[in-house]
Each structure stands twice: as C-alpha cells, then as structure tokens.
Image 1 (tube, rainbow over the protein chains, first blue to last red):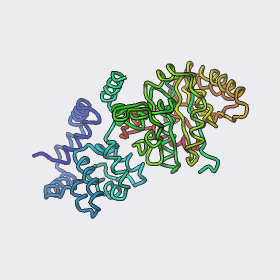
Image 2 (tube, one colour):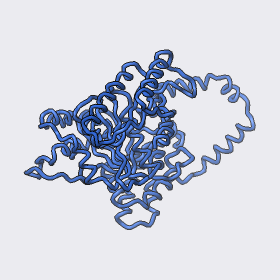
Image 3 (cartoon, rainbow over the protein chains, first blue to last red):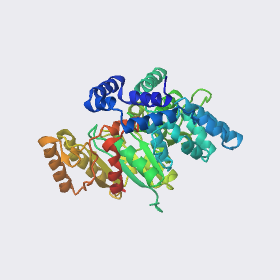
Image 4 (tube, rainbow over the protein chains, first blue to last red):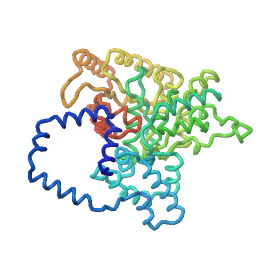
Length: 166
Length: 278
C-alpha cells in the first residue's frame, strides 16, 4: 500500500540528492548492524511504532492550499488571486520546496514553520498572502515569483531568441 | 538609517573578474531590504547581467522575451520603437524598475542589465559618465541605499559608477591574480580623484571572499595564506579597511544566486559581514 507522506518525503529527498545517492544511502542503512539488530528484536519501541502506524491508518484530513483558501472569507478579487496561487501551490509550481517556503517566510517577515512539510506551511503562508496588497498578489502570479530555482536552458534559449531578433 | 541628504551610494568594484562582486552586491541588497527594512536600489552595470538574473530568476527570460527596458535604455535616453509603439518614447522609470523579487523582497528595486549593454556602448557616442549620478540626484533621493554592481574591467562604466558613488566596496579572493587587481584599482581611483577634486569617494573596505577558513580551521594551504598576507599588507599601505567578517567558501552561495534556498551551509554567514558593513 502506498503511503502518501512517505512518497512526498522521498520525492523531495530524491529531487535534492539524486536517486543514485539516495539508493546508496538506503543500502548502507539496510546493511548496517544497528538496523539488522533492530529488525530482529521486537522491542518496546517497535510496539510503539506499530501503535503509531495504526494511528496513521486512521483517515487523516489532508490540508490542501485550495481547501484552506476556500475557507478564507476574502473579497472576490483577492479570493480569486489566492485561489490561483493555491492551485499553483498544490501543483508544486508556487513555492515548490521547503527551501522556497523558508525564503518566502524570511522576506515576508513571518516565522518559518518548524515542520519541513509543505502541507504544514499552508495556513501560515496563505494567511499571510490574504493580507498582502492585490498588486503584490498579481505580481506574484504574473512574474511567477517563488517558482523554484533557475535553470540555464530557458534563459539561454531566451538569449538566443533575443539575439536573433536584434 | 534614512538619510536626509539622500541615499548612501556604494559601488562594488574590482577590476578582476570572479571575485564575488555580484554575490556580495546581491546579498548586501537582500540584507538591507529584508533585515534592516531599508529602501534599496540595486543597479546592474555589468553587461553579463548576473545581478539581474540573481534577483529575477527565470523571470529574466520573460524580461528578454518581452523586450522590457533596462539600463541600456537609460543610457540611450529613450525607449526605441517596438511593436505597437511606432516612435521612440521617453523613459518611464516605473517600467524599468523591477520590484518584489524573490531574492530582494519588497523594499528593493532593481535596474536590470542586458547582455547587449556593451555593444550598445561601443556603437554609440561616448555616454555621459555622470548619467547615473544625475538619475540618483533627480529620482532616488527618498531611498536609503544604492548598490551598484560593476563590470570586471575598467571602462566608461567604472567612471559611471565612481561618479554615482560615495563609497567603494572591494571583494577579493585570496589568490595571486586577484591580488593584482588592488594596485589597478588604486591607480584608477587616484585618476578619478585628480579629475574630480570636489567628489569625495572612499574605499569602505575590502571583503575577503572564498575565505579558506572553515569552522576556524585554515584549509587554504600556504599559497592562500601568502596571498592573504599580501592583501592585508597592501590594504594597510593604501589605508583601506579590511572587514573582519569574511565570505567563507560555501557551495550555498551559487545555490542562493540560482534561487535554491535548501541547505545553505556556511553561506548564511553572509549576514555577519552585512551586519558589520552596515
């Protein structure tokens, strides 16, 4: 059975370190004596883990940015813009990783969330966005600010295009 | 820190390339805007436009595609005819300034550069070296800080930066070739002072970049130590201050310039330098 939380965390780690390094690290953990000993002995911590897993199996309500924004009472124009950003957030186009969220919080003077999950940052980020000027929201949407690290390809292509015109 | 007499203008200069001018300029601008709540103008005078790319990220692509105005048009003094506008038009600063960038925050505006800047300068009549100084005097008196990122060669753009500046900040790496940039800069500044005796321009200080100290351990080896000693000796001879806080070697710096804020490592130590600087 697939676990969404695990999938998300793994995707983020693989995105950051590359599949080969993650694979190597997992193999090293699997081969370590500590891991093998823990696997053999049923211990108090294992039973605690089983309890936690049972608790995890209970249906948990997933916080999405679009869901959060729909509960905010905002004027139709602000609500529309927030919804646009929320859709992009859920698609990982706006603030696509925790590093981006940390930078966003830093430049907007809001506390960085303790948990490194994007989901946990939703209330903090979107509550703040609901207080931002309409022009700034429009700018964020139009300029695709906070959409992740730059890649050389698109800029190199734009320079080539621009040279062709001139 | 708001200046009743206008903003403090600082140019980040070293005739040597690759010493970290753009990184230092970008991060000082970021610190002043976000952590000191100062109104900042960053000006990209380098035709390679790295400062613009650092602040605008992939939006720089849109800026090129949409042929938005830049420092090139400021130097030309007009916006050329384009699709839908059949005649040259006057400069609208609001259309040139880039605001609210993910690196600079809401208090920082940027005058972006374009890679055809040097071609435009070469092909045109020699530009007025006071063009930026005039612009700051007329349009930006309400700001706190103006930071100019300069190109790594001595050209008319160096004079443009000098005319606009009260202070010079010099990033340098502890490497032999980088140290040779020092006497060149001294000569260039002396020439400028002789030509402009009423203009006060001082070296605010030297910031050592790519410092080989890592968690208090010197990992640079004897050549790096020798270069650093020479740098410090030369600075003392010129009466230039050397900042105590250095930019350490860190892979976090190029990541930040790309807009990747995950695992910044020692790069976060730029704040210590910025605190000392301001």
